[in-house]
Image (tube, rainbow, N blue to C red; front, side, top):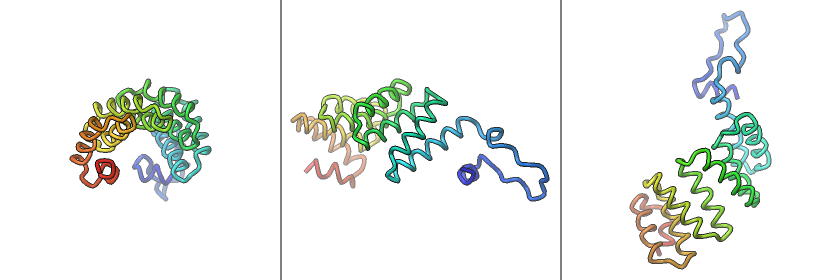
Length: 178
């Protein structure tokens, strides 16, 4: 944690000449910074293949800040990894309610809907995400896949085309564009 604070420039180690104890982290680091560090810690656990440990960290963040859309979003992703889709949807719904302007949250929920074969909802969430960030090729690919699953190739093709305009090397879009 201290290393992360130093790297982030939020904490300066005391001088060797300093004879008094350094201030406590709570006195020098804002609650928002502590929350972000905990979220990064949870994300690292998730990426390391420890979703249960990540969930425990996200639970702590949510207990301290029940309005943390990022904590609900990341916990929803952890539940998705564990294939606990109803819990994933509940958390992603809460994340979107708290922050309806983050396209990543819609993208994550679209992926859960896709796994649950609710392709209409997946396409709708991708569409909402695209409205928020029309420069993200992955969002167009996601909607194109949902539209293919709905047997709407004529609607999917422009999504894959746009994904490739935005990122000509996006393998997934190339594959589905065929």
